[in-house]
Length: 69
Image (cartoon, rainbow, N blue to C red; front, side, top):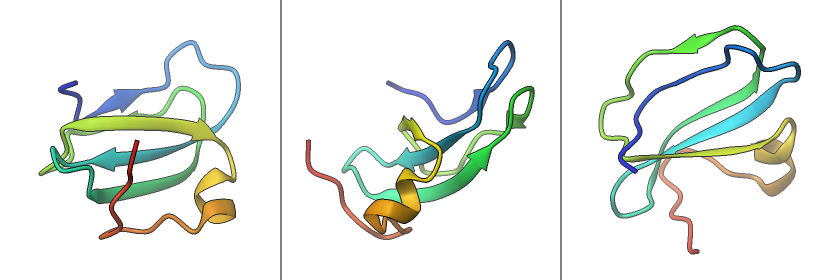
């Protein structure tokens, strides 16, 4: 933290990405982000949660949700 963008340089597999606000509200979800891709800064994001590909769908994570850690 803080982190509002990511890159997939030197990655060899796809991932799911969840961008979170300071209050852990989901502000953006990206499914199956491919290697060597880039994500520009996400407005309102303060943290980035990187998950195995398919996790967003498996757990039903959507924008507006709040995550508890």
